[in-house]
Length: 205
Image (cartoon, rainbow, N blue to C red; front, side, top):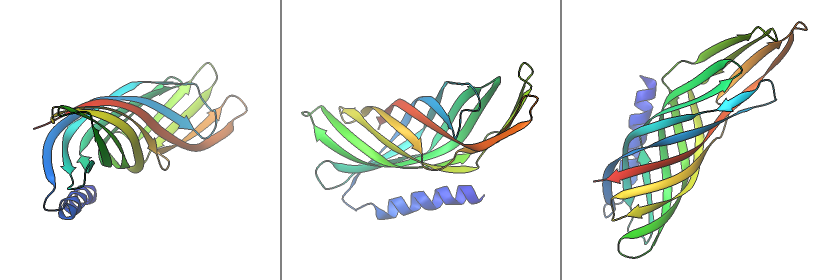
């Protein structure tokens, strides 16, 4: 309930702060995550996997040439294979991006954007694995909420279709891990960060 209230308050604050002369457009956004899971130390082999995100979005064009911002509420899925375990993060992500557009004529514009992203985990938070070949037991725990940031660029076509790419990087830890390796029973532990390259499209009505 507290997470839902936080989301409602955030969107209410955004709507209150929008100037009366701003142009507002609503739309739908979706795309792919190319996940990069980082550890404090090299404790396990990992392979990155693709995920996806989708959800409603709103774009505000301010009465200042080229300046605006957008906000979205996205269902976001990311995953990575660590050892013999697949770690999947399912969350609601709320990016809020400041954007600056440069016109390329009457039908297109290129824009740059950056801003914070607030995430709330809605899937499993704990994962465990055991590698019999090396007698290594590992566990991962994802945080209930996280903060990240976006930096990217995009192309706006005909005032409705948007194509963009960005890098989303964690500003704090995404989770924690513990690993007991081999017959020596040595314990390794630390933090993880789940970053992602993102490519997507959005359509504004």
